[in-house]
Length: 248
Image (cartoon, rainbow, N blue to C red; front, side, top):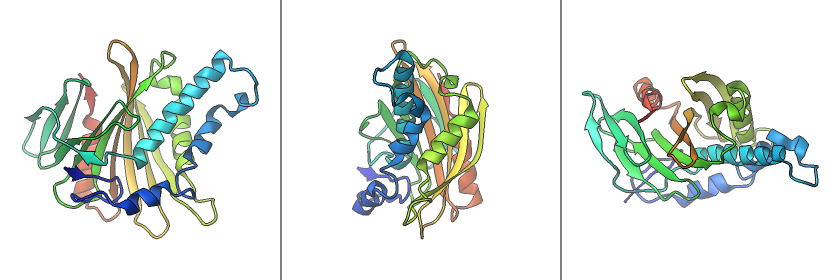
């Protein structure tokens, strides 16, 4: 079994220091508090209306997206079919979850225990690296039929990233900054950075889309990440991999 962390990748056992650093209350355990602001005007009502119900479901989905940044696969195992696409990249196909993605030829692929998600798949270099790409799949209610159900991409991105930021705390926690956001062909693309005090800055690039398996809607969050220390070639690989994701 290999191990993977979104911040400190190592092919050996998963570090307990990682668990501590990202469950520490001053860094990310209060993420739900910020996300709950999505529909705070309804929280004072004593009865849950249909509008409140949608707001609650929206907050739950946003929390899942935010959580996928911190709690990526811990233990991975052999994955599904892989076929050659080019000399530098190959196509990974998941027939069960109906998607495919192009990944660097020499990267490893693994599955992890869902832990609240429908499915999590990880892609990462063989060598020790902070770079990786993950795909987290979350179930959605019937109220969510397209990405616009979460609002426009600009507001969605601002809410997601501001919900991760804890730079205002004393002592300061993680600093989250939105770099860019756009909508294209049914996907929301969000680029942002995260940095804990005294640590290297992490760049994250996410593609978030929605699809149905015939019974219910599902949210797919594809997130690639790398640090400032990573080469331009590695960061290019990450973005190319995330952008290549598509439903089949």
